[in-house]
Image (cartoon, rainbow, N blue to C red; front, side, top):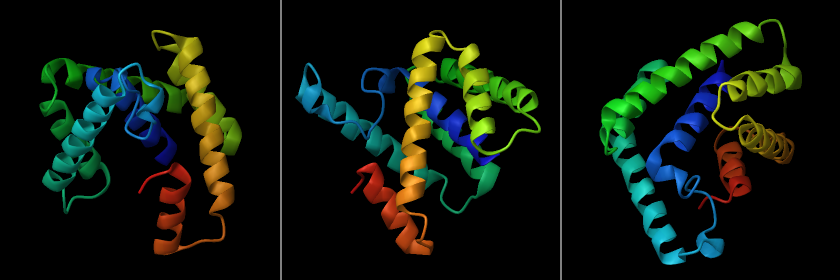
Length: 163
């Protein structure tokens, strides 16, 4: 379930127009054609996310993720189109979960990625990015396996390159 929610979040992030140009806030702008514009977009995305987090403070689980999606879509140029993309991704995730039922661990992760990417505009690119995400998750999991609580969160942030 957690993987499916993660995949939905990642696919939402990749599908929003503001994020398409940069492909996420964690990427380095030094290789961009226009690093200054890249940094401005990244800062704007971070501010939007912080605003959404503040609006959804105190909520947890599905309630929190639904609130975050609503808040993030409300900040887009076309909120209705954003909400439609989210609904489509949720449907795709439901179909993928059904197709991968009974599988566990790495086999389930691979199945979910393939099922989700089968419905993408560019399945090859989606799978390549998915493989990179799975490899990154595996690397982080290995590096932080002996940590707990706040130490674990700090390790994950460090491995992701976050401040």
